[in-house]
Image (tube, rainbow, N blue to C red; front, side, top):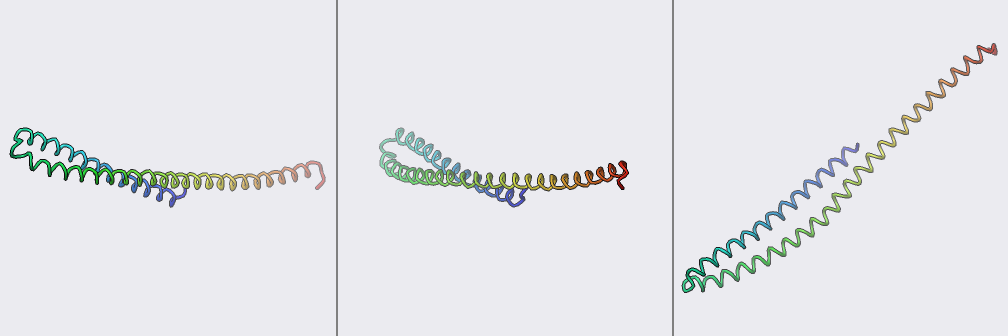
Length: 135
């Protein structure tokens, strides 16, 4: 097996894992924003006179941050989709190298078998010749 190909595939899989972890973190941040917004809504509904004004500014900031996070999530998902193709290509390269090596070993073995058979045929022919009294 191609050691370099295996190493390359492992590296690409690790990189994909890193990209997926970043995506998970972005989603968690977005979810945390949603939870914070709900908590603020509850506080604002309990004290509409004092919290109402502050809530509007908070809600606007959350909406802007959520929009930015959604854009980052979409960009990260696009990166992941593209990188999955890179991982698939690395896997294909590794399998191609494995098949090529397997074929090379089989060809070497076949050549060795052919040479051995030629030697055995020659020995057999000599023995038959001696037996017939030709030598």
